[in-house]
Amino acid sequence: ARHGGYTQLAEPSKQVRKIPRSIHDISNGDHILGFGAELAEDHPGYHDEEYKKRRSYIGDLAKLHKIGEPIPCLEYTDEEIKIWGDILEKLTQLYPTHACKRYLDTFQLFNFVPDRLPQLQELSEVLMMRTGWQIRPVAGLLHPTDFLNALAFRTFHSTQYIRHGSNPMYTPEPDVCHEILGHIPLLADPEFANVAQVIGMASLGASKEEIWHLTKLYWYTVEFGTVKERDGVKAFGAGLLSSFGELEHMLSGEDGYMPIFEDLDPFKKLPKMNYKDGFQKKYFLCESFSDVASKLTAYARSLQRF
Ligand code: TIH
Ligand code: FE2
Image (tube, rainbow, N blue to C red; front, side):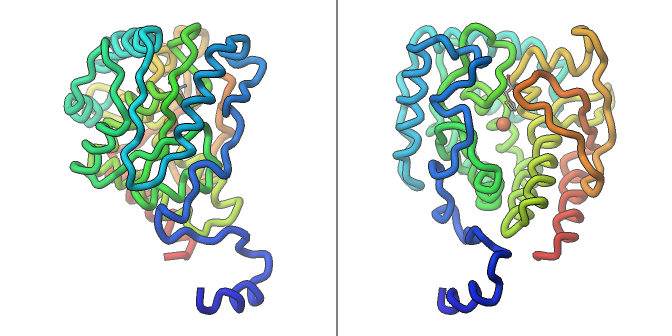
């Protein structure tokens, strides 16, 4: 701040955003993209007024949250708990054959049960003890710069509302089931936690183009990553682990076409992300978490900001 004025004069339009120095410099409410309470016409909850009201209520609570304060507990309705329970039961049948070994191990730590939807606060406490990560509630999709930057400070932004009950096997956007079943278990794994943090560190001060590439790297690892294990390809990406539709699709391709698998090279151009319009067409394969962490680190170093 001492030379703030000078820096700005010396480098006029290069850095529009201030590089955050701690999680306190990142807002969880200033840059929400789409999917707030304003649902698109093709969203399964678009015609459900009750559902939209519930989401804005939960979203407004998230905007009030301050880092360091406990995350407010939500009293989930029986209907919401039923959605969670159904998803949990379907997914636990698939995990033994479809999820990676590390996920199976960390999943055990949480003792999830169908008749109780866990609170983000208690999960954040488990993560804090195991890997020093914390959860911060967020109303909807955060701007990628904010979302990725927060990973550098071991902070994971999480939604707290649940998907619409009409299509539990897949939702086009994050919801609390995706966060809890997809992301949270592996954030308790130190090596996986490093993978996420490396992407976050690389995003600090990154240009628009670099942020875009990092968003794709995040997408094809943390969200949809797969790993080679002795008995075949397994999922570690949260978007796979929270969607029993996509998890099955990944290995069987029974819905019409077989997905393609390719080894991940962070320096290569990555395909367009399939967002909002169904399953991914291509998944990227990793050898192990430590291997992908070192590949991502090599890419991050090439950005020459370390
Ligand atoms: N499609 C995932 C699910 O149904 O759980 C949720 C998302 C993952 C990535 C973006 S949205
Ligand atoms: Fe996610």
